[in-house]
Structures are given as C-alpha cells and as structure tokens.
Image (cartoon, rainbow, N blue to C red; front, side, top):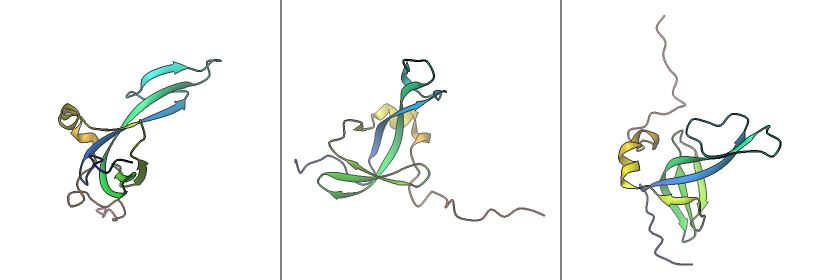
Length: 111
C-alpha cells in the first residue's frame, strides 16, 4: 500500500455509482437497457468532499446531505475532481461545515 495517497481533508472528489432503475435520472451516463427491457443500468457521478482519513487505505467522505461514507482508496470509482468540475459543478459539492445549515434544526413557521 502506498503511503502518499494524495487525498487530504477538504479535497473535492467524484465517485461514480452504478445504479439500476426503470427511469434513469437526468445526470445518468452510460445508460444500457436490461436484456428484457424492464430496467436500465446507468452511472451517476456523486460529488463529495473528503472529511478525514481512517488510515492509508480508506477515507471518509461527506455527501451534500451530511452523510458519511467510507471508501477504499484503491476503488476505481473514486477520483479527484477536475478544476472545471469544481467550478462548473460547485453547487453539487457539500458546503463546508461552518457554512452548512443543520438539517435537524426546526423550521419556524409564521402563524
């Protein structure tokens, strides 16, 4: 296992997820119909931020909704975000913790 993994907290990463459903999402790529035509298999790119490293082989990433995912560094679906993805798709990456609002906070309604 190499020690210089190239990921540090705060790095923007892209993770390619393979999904299957009867209706691919608008961001779907590599869409293929199933053999009997009931479903589609497709890929969706997820835009996450590195939260911290567990060891030299795994990182913990944060999603836009605040969930944490543990990913192996040798996973072929994981890669650094390109500069144009950081600029053009900046709204898809999670906000830094100091700017994010908590989902658990109650929303006050006017009566």
